[in-house]
Length: 286
Image (tube, rainbow, N blue to C red; front, side):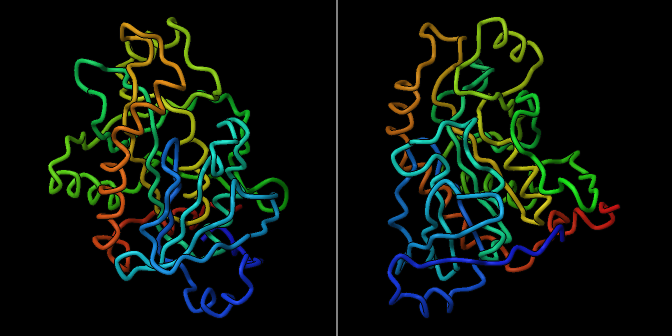
């Protein structure tokens, strides 16, 4: 385990303090991405403000139960989509999840398809690889000063959660790709044609703005992390140049499928992991 994250919090409704504490530790978390801010599937929801050493998370956490599992939801960009990807406080978001006790994170996200002949709009890509093009502009480690740590990150996404996501999509009749490389760009701008063609020619699959450093920070924190990408555009490969309006329009037309997949996964996640994500930092501290 990378570190202990002390929980400091304030329930928005102070009368719910005992109910909140009875839920702890929370088992499973989810980041809501573009167009996906509705946590109404959570039973008996409690809104909690969590404080972290890295500042404020993107929003308050909504906690409760889903399919008899304790669950925490956080709007990655804040409710109303008010925080651009390069300004998200990723460390605070992951720290908040860790402090709540979360051991697994499901991370659905809008993305662009870099391979339009293979990956169509509205399909799911359960990414297994990650290529960072944010050039270190984001805070991507909890270890700054004090102990030095080196994260083993050859396989950036949890294999157990990836398998569950893919099998659940198949059961629901959704078209899903069991693997793919996610290129993470800094944002908030979209790619130039030259950049997009470079990524396409490398054979990479989808492009987005948030999987890094979420995945790396989750691994440092000893949390299993799965990215579920859903292409909303063809980057610059289509007839239309991608716009934020296009992304939200496509996402809105498919949001129920995203919710169905992510929430159906929850009951299938075993209590104890068979992967090594949660012990990845063992031996990594110097």
